[in-house]
Length: 188
Ligand SMILES: [Zn+2]
Ligand SMILES: [Zn+2]
Image (cartoon, rainbow, N blue to C red; front, side):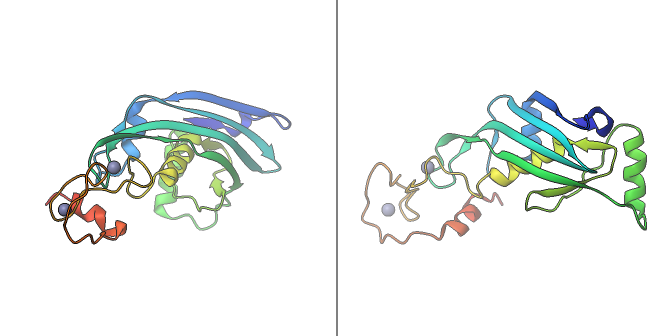
C-alpha cells in the first residue's frame, strides 16, 4: 500500500482506487468491543505534489459489524471519512535506531508504522507514501469510542436488564455516564 513519490507527476496526480480487505479493517479495530469488518472496504485517493510536500485527498469507507455498546444488539456501522492531508517531507537529522530500521525496511519496500500528527498534516520520508497507514489512521479517527446501534439508543437498564428501547421499567433510572459504559464490556 505504497506509492513511490517518483510515480507522482509534477502536475496532476496519481489515483489510488482499491478495495480494502476485511483483514485490513479488522487489524485496526479495538479489541474491547466485539467489532469486525462486515465486508471489504474501499479507498479512493488522489496524490499530488506541492513542491516537496505531498497532498493526499479522497475518501475511505468500510462497514463494521458488532454489538451496540449500550443495548448489546447486533449492529452495523459505516465509516466514511473524507481524507485531506498534507505530508511534509521528513528531514532526517540525528537518526535514531528505530529510524535507521525504518530506512532499512523502506529499501525493502515496506514501511514501519509511524504515528503521524493530526490536524491534517503528516510526514513522509521523501521516497514513498504509505497510504495504507494513512487510511488506517483516518478510519480509526472516524470510529466512535463506543459505537451504538443509533445515536439515541437507550441501552439496557443497569438494574433489571430490560432493553429500554423496547420497554420501560420501574427501576430508579440512573443513566450511567456513557464514558463508563464501556467498562461493562470488559471481560475479566
Ligand atoms: Zn443499541
Ligand atoms: Zn430496570
